[in-house]
Length: 126
Figure 1 (spheres, rainbow, N blue to C red):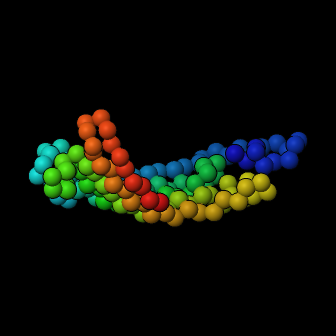
Figure 2 (figure 1 turned 120 degrees about the horizontal axis):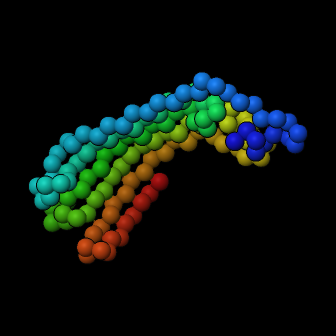
Figure 3 (figure 1 turned 90 degrees about the horizontal axis):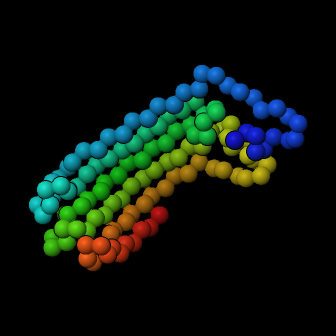
């Protein structure tokens, strides 16, 4: 991505030994009474990287999601989450002349209403 912001004629640098790792976990908190394959879940995903040549230093997302938890609505699902996306300083500096990227925290909540087996309607707020 550094190539995008370099002036013409300046060679791009290369880096060896870059690293990134991530972990993801989910846990069923409460099983659904209406659906054996559903319930209320807690989940988390985290990523850490050196930020060069990766465009990200870190990422975190945690939340709750539910499916089959609303009485009388076994096919509806919902969720709420928090996330934080930490763009790497190298990436932010490389594109700064053209684009201003800041780290991005966020909150999302959604509800998906099942109207029929193949028809869904949902609300999503971010």
